[in-house]
Length: 482
Image (cartoon, rainbow, N blue to C red; front, side, top):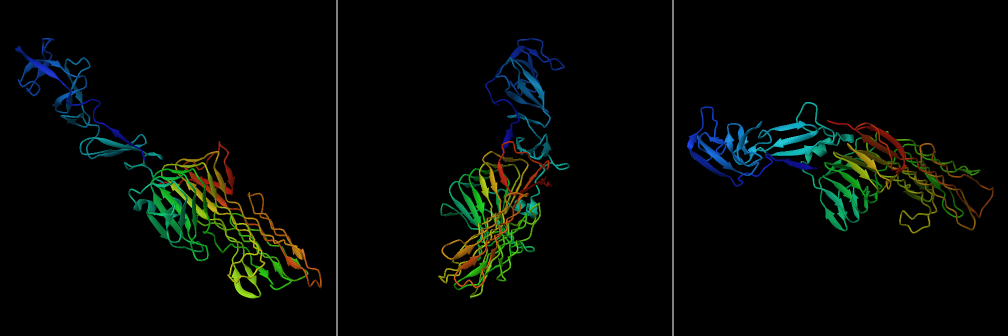
């Protein structure tokens, strides 16, 4: 934050001055001297040493001779006399007029002024103006109840990403170029069906090289990530994240019959701001489509949750349940000062996978997943700017499609949602040919639903003159203050 020093005087104390008493003249009863060559009345003798003497003056303009009550005797512009300057906050014999009342804190004209014991002031600008009835700045009240953590760290360190960095949201381990970085961090436990939050409290947060976060859990899932900055946030290089996805809005499970020939339905896509797409059905064989995941979360992104996974795959010949493709992660960036985005923030859902080895049995599992839903991004600050290079990607992942030859019949994967007006696509269905004992049938996976983008500003709205790329369900709201 910017700190500006306000000095008590606009001159240098102790500049060279010369005086000479008029041996034939003393000050009159009203403290005046009649001889222009000896214009200053040294009432108590503190300047030249002779009380009541009229003296000549040769001084540096602006220099302070002494304090006389609450006035600072200051050399005039001609350098030949001292003028009394009234001091609102008192006079210091060396500094002259004090800039402020020692020990006082005031807030006026959008800045807090703190006066130290010597009368020197430190000024801090208030991005949101002064608080209504207290001598302090109006402060942000971060979403998801994060004000407590911001207040717990009086002087948080800056976090500057200068080389590739990763964050494990479960453990809080942050590393950059292989070296650990320590910043104040807190883990907020889950409240309902969310996965909790990993909260980092920093000063300025600047990303000049890639920064990514993962859930870190054994299954790849983990807490959402919130970075709360006392200073400014600048995203100048790509940021990406997975792992804050949920299972409550996951797509329906697919089913793999196993063996050869193999017949399977893919899983449905995950949901977030919009629902996921259903998988294709294998008709004439009694394999129904897997449903798409339902919508989930709120436009305000409270609680802080990401996109849901695609459905898993149930295998008849193996008790293992294959997980679906991950939904995009959840990221909250809150700043007391400003947020500027000029690079990519990638929270898109994962594309559906095919024939993925997941249970280490070295079998070709021949399974098809839907796509994960797009994640969630929350930005809030007194000033939010998205430049031309800003690219927020929170679209759904495309559903998978397993097409190999020979003897494979395959359905295409549904497209992931990329706008609120375009629903996630369903996977393509197939019709089983009666008595076919040679060919394999795999339906297509459902596409992932659309993720969320939320921007909170003091006015409740934001314009985008630089036309950034925004893929997600965009909503805007008022920045809460306290």
